[in-house]
Image (cartoon, rainbow, N blue to C red; front, side):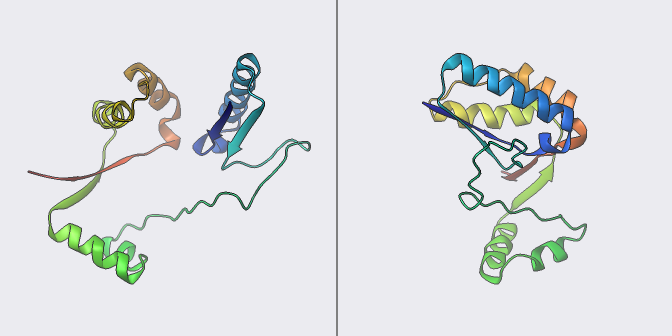
Length: 141
């Protein structure tokens, strides 16, 4: 058995990153995981094995203009995005935990995976509000 942790926003908050990593080491040791894998973070231990070419991530700043964002998308994908827009697909930011939890719960449950409690998300959002954001893509009707 092995376990993986995808680092992300917590890397920007050193105290949170340290606490999360410490907790994960404790859990991995207690559960007897022979491997503990961190993805998307910098190796800050000299004895950590690093496989920097194994995974790739892409991040881009979102512009304030819809047109500028569309221009940044390769031509064929941009055509599909425009087609979705013409067919009523919409995207919006929403800080409502109920909406997030509904989408998450349905998705995870469909995969047969246990669902974290709604309170877990409320606490995470409360503590990391400045470092997180989420958006919804949907079609009305």
